[in-house]
Length: 103
Ligand SMILES: [Zn+2]
Image (cartoon, rainbow, N blue to C red; front, side):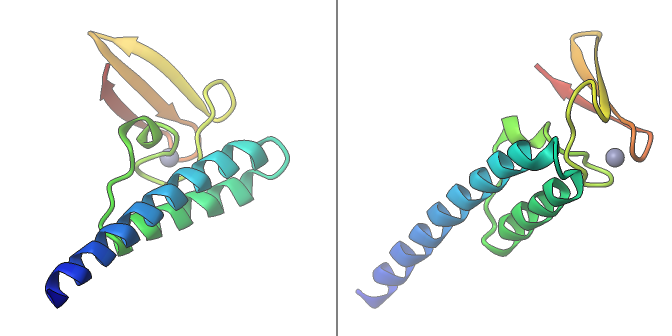
């Protein structure tokens, strides 16, 4: 009985962590124009939550930050987006590295 309660709690913790991660990405988007370094800070926090609660960052949000330097990415601002052989290629202008995503 106790075990079940615990796992339920854990599930709830994961759920709220996921909500917080989504919230951090939203905030990052909001503040990027005025304060890019704060946006990057939100990404760091989102990643911390993802690691702490072992919650995966939703796939759509994974494209919003650089896999190498973890900076928040805005196409046309600090990253370039190209499609190449059926893949989306992001070029991060901060660390000059590429990320590839399948559609
Ligand atoms: Zn980068």
